Image (cartoon, rainbow, N blue to C red; front, side):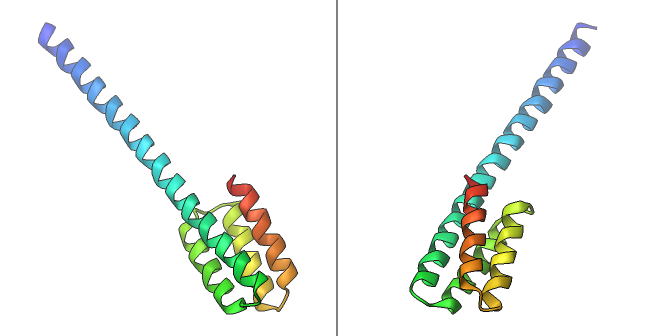
Length: 103
């Protein structure tokens, strides 16, 4: 009986720790993805400022791939659409919105 209780406690601790570790790993991965996306968005803004729309589009594609699904990814997609339509101002606005959502 005592060993059964000890085994149950050990299993509860083991599974509880596994959940904590897994949730922390997920948080770190999300933070790294967000940091990568932010860097790519900054590069896209610099490219747009210098008139290099092709480089900006590449940076936006990389940012889009590193973001999880959500509003920031939607804004990056809208920035790419605006840029493809020749609307640089709209693309910059969408990039700034995506950056604000990632803060």
